[in-house]
Image 1 (cartoon, rainbow, N blue to C red):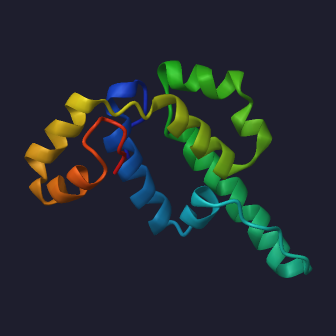
Image 2 (image 1 turned 90 degrees about the vertical axis):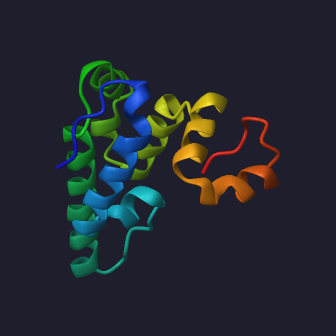
Amino acid sequence: MPDKLVRTEQYRAWAALAQLYLENAELWEFVVEDTEEPTSAGPKKIWKTKRSRAVLVLAKLVGGEVDTFVQNEDLVQNGDPHIFWTKIKTRYNSLTYSSQLDILIIFPEYLSWFRWCGGAGQCYF
């Protein structure tokens, strides 16, 4: 399991590892999109179970000030992993222009894409 997200600076690495973990557990689809509840009983039970597990995993992957934010927003009680992920991403994904440049130094293959989107610090990859 990845380290807990406790501050903004570690969001990008945390998000990548959390995604891999959730994909491996076959829960990522519930996080990345708002899935519709099935109508028949069998699939509905599986859907509810996986959705609850996704929220539980996300709740276990946060700590410190992020945990306080999660509690204040009632993200666990809400029970929607998509909303949970989106609110965390919106709050803690603060990729700045200078950190984008750091990524370009490490991964130069993104340079052409970065130029395409203007390089004005508004691109997120």
